[in-house]
Amino acid sequence: MPEKPRPYYPLFLDLEGRAAVVIGGGTVAARKIESLVRSGARVTVVAPECADEIEQWGRDGAIELRRKHYERGDLDRAVIVIAATSDAATNARVAADCREEHILVNVVDLTEMCDFIVPAVVESGSIQVAISTGGQSPALARKLKHDLQRLVGPEYGEANDILGNLRDAAKSALPTDGDRKQFFDRLIAAGLVELLRENRHREAYETVIQLCESAGVPAAEMLRRRLAE
Image (cartoon, rainbow, N blue to C red; front, side, top):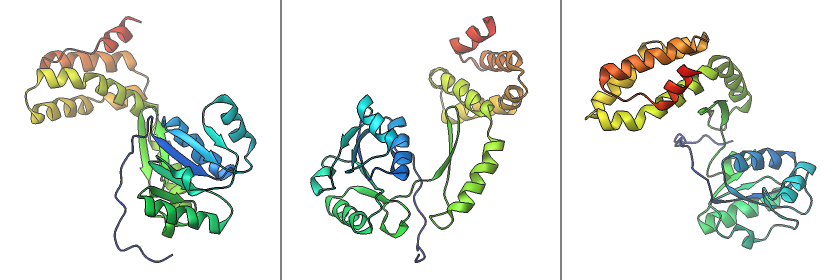
């Protein structure tokens, strides 16, 4: 693979309610489809034959399934396209058509044909950590994912939910970005993540409520409900 002169631009893309097209119906395509469906995308799959799980998603109405060979019209209104067929000529045609239509395309395992690459992802509740090696070493990306899965436990997802529930209250009560940054930094420094990791949930909630009260930030109702349980 030729060396890419500049790094990729990392981002998280909101696909909820937007059209995504997957060309191909095998097991690799199935993994891509599952991820797109979870993101809330409106997924169309184009393939003359499909794996059983893809057929089931079609029957369930989770995706639109077109049992046919690819045609350029299948790209209509797509925001992103993934080409995951076993036919190199079809994948190349999809990539070329997408570029002419100004649609972002990913061709599985052919980085040089891609406008974007899909990272390895570690998830913990509402936390997502994306890992990329720039398409150079999927094996190393898998190793990094394995290592991070041991580090990013469920306490991070719960802490994120708690802090997220305080955002609006903090915006209303604290006048500047600096004030809000200091407030949330204090919550982290107070050991929120560590308390949750050690299953000291009541102490964690009480700590957050105390810091909210001292900063004049109304504590999220969620925390008071949890304390009452």
